[in-house]
Image (cartoon, rainbow, N blue to C red; front, top):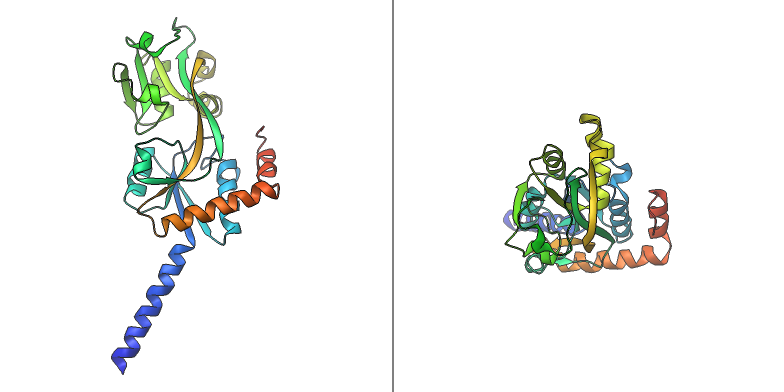
Length: 251
């Protein structure tokens, strides 16, 4: 009898833990202001959109900000449920379920204003050293361009500093994120850096951003469905637009 009661208690505790895990949604990502970041109000507009959508679906939501390589590692192993703000690639689609899109990001190159660098097609850049954050996707053409001299860097800030110091010729990343980092963060440590670096045309891609749910996450497909339902709800009830307006983000 005692053994039966013990077994029932264990099963109940196991069921409760599984239920709790199923209604908790954990994210890990990199600081990517003004879209999302550890120092932004409510962790940025994308984070607030995601949290609002999931809370409508009765989820407890947690965000952790780390390096992108750690984010890929931890979600790949199922330690966290999802990446926040990932671009969709065919390679990532092997390991993640992608939500409906949340926003859009313009990606391309930064250069030192004094450098005489311009291009129309990527092969014209084969003699330049181009910084790329480890694990980042930029555009399909750029990511597959093995003939380019791509220099892996730990973070966008590191890449922009190397660009300023002449250790890189170009730095690949988002226009709005790079400009934000230059004016709001790097300018404090290196006065004048924001005036020395510029984003150049042509733009490489207009990348949509998603949440990418690890296929190893508990109830991964259910979480995907629930998030998309919550996102549709906040589109319909006007919360999505209100959040963007609150964060001073134009449509």
